[in-house]
Length: 421
View 1 (cartoon, rainbow, N blue to C red):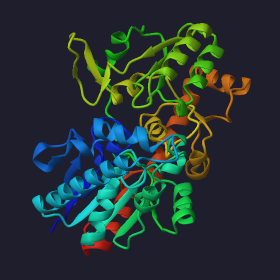
View 2 (view 1 turned 30 degrees about the vertical axis):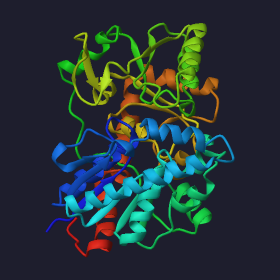
View 3 (view 1 turned 180 degrees about the vertical axis):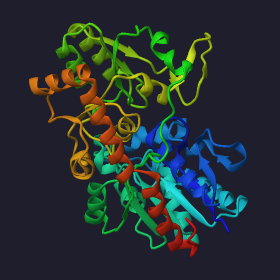
């Protein structure tokens, strides 16, 4: 008999890492008759199994009002405290309703108890779990102490209470070994390490005519060399290094394509990147309007492609991030059999590099050796194919759904006694 599971987060929509990983968890659970339901402030999940509460979304005006007064300062006014706890109490009531509506057996909280994008939601969850003893898995993708914007805070008391709370009813899950060690050191809380995964047991489909139209749609020629930066435009992605790489290749056929928009961190960085690309003679294309969750059309009739379509048409993946919680784009490069440049961010060094993947690496800056290796990959088809095929097998061995299935079996069995994963 399946377990009724409630996923809780600020947003389950789009192609952000939390939304993608939660969908993978739900798919593996559904394969074994466990039914998933969704609670969030923004959702693209099935309406019949979802409860959308606008104040649970970090982009709600009331939550943004709180965040402006909670971070970047050391003190808060009484009205800020009142607003936070009033909204937390309201959200707690909706959590009670969510669990009753779907007769839930288990909650899986996605990132809402580790990064304070929505303070009232984290507090509401903490109070709800403490009051009910509800069995909960807290899946942590990003901790607040990993982000500079949360380093100066007027809500330190709340962060210590709820991000994450040290409650016996919660099984904490981290996505990398550094986060696992940090959580133990900072909170005295143990966790299970569950890496991000992809379905490496299922080969990606061959690109169809629709996917092959991606290049023309974004203004590229068939013989152009497409360097894909498959990330949001935020400073920690280090996209200036991708621009520097394309500039160093000194090949007018090399074009840099960014798949995602700026997100929630403003457009100043994008402006700086555009200026850098122009001064470096690099053809930079921002394709967030052409890349979406699913195929379709924009209001002007132009086609919308999926990220998988973009990967299928790419010749090389740039991933020069300064910091990542894990590195979904790196796994995607392995999955779609594309060569990739990686800046050796800490989680890559600790959790991915030891697996033996064959990638081009840089250590915070480009060198002539890095550029020459990229040139070889572009020119040597056999060398490139051997590299990407090897990386696919690495992904299959260490970052596949079978790995996730083993981890989830232990987690679900621990709370429910059912071992059918």
